[in-house]
Amino acid sequence: MTLIDDRNLDDAAEAATADQPMAAGEAAPGTKRRPGWEQALVYVVVGLPVLGLIVGVVLAINYGGISWTDAGIAFFFYLLSGFGITVGFHRFFTHQSFKTNRPLKIFLAVAGSLALEGPVIRWVADHRKHHAFSDAEGDPHSPWRFGNSTWGLLKGLAWAHTGWLFDREQTSARRWAPDLIADRDIMKINKLFPVIALSSLLAPTLMGFALTGTAKGAFTAYIWGGLVRILVVHHVTWSVNSLCHVIGERPYKTMDKASNVSWLAIVSFGESWHNLHHADPKCARHGVEKGQIDTSAAVIRMFEKAGWATDVRWPTEKRMARLRKDPAAAA
Image (cartoon, rainbow, N blue to C red):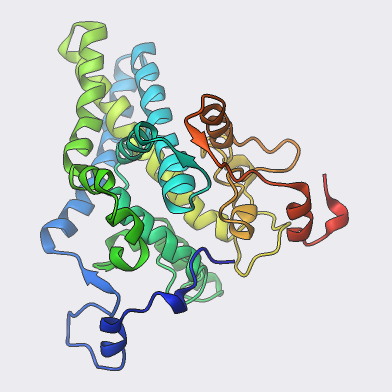
């Protein structure tokens, strides 16, 4: 199942160039080529948190582990940025699983940007394209890109996890996220992404200094609450792109290989119940079976009870039964 019918999205410019050969280094129709400075920044954003983890481990070994202050700061920003991605960027902005008031919309856009997974419009465009071509040609990050041989799948897993991030051909935001481009609030937040990204590192640092009153406390908070926290959020998100299209169970009918990976559910806030999500992308809850913990759905429920979220697309048993491969297996 796809979120958007690709046949209705081709514009005249793409149609006019579709059959023309591309010059060397030219972007394919419907994409744009990332400039060199932005390409270099991708390496920094992906690599710097890895360096932070190395520094953090060295500090922990030499100075008696991680302080409760650092752990608390890291956990707070992990929840803030993680739910910003799952509830905000994914279920709200990409799939429109619910509606929000203006303050919550702005909050979710800022919170998701703190994860440093890219500006909201770029993230949404990539993910909508992923659903339109899931595990087929055109999918930005399918692990089946290089075939189903052992070597091809290993290459595909590496591509789906991080490799695709370095592809200089970028998804067309005008094609895949025109609704967000038309939203003045989101356009402003999108342009402010560099500032928000820096704040994602500065805020834990300042909090560490405020709570400890020392430069050391500020630095360790920067390492654990900033860099390492971003590293964990990144790789949890990327694991959904990679692992959740290769291993796990597939109880619901989909046109791709999206699967459930239960051991990833807690840290991914319910995103790893990926099979149902691809069977019904607009559903606000991904973990619908008994025992499937979906904390993102719980947060949406909290917003709904507060009156901040409306028209939530909750699952119904009738629809779930129709989507199950074995309707008799209904919980």
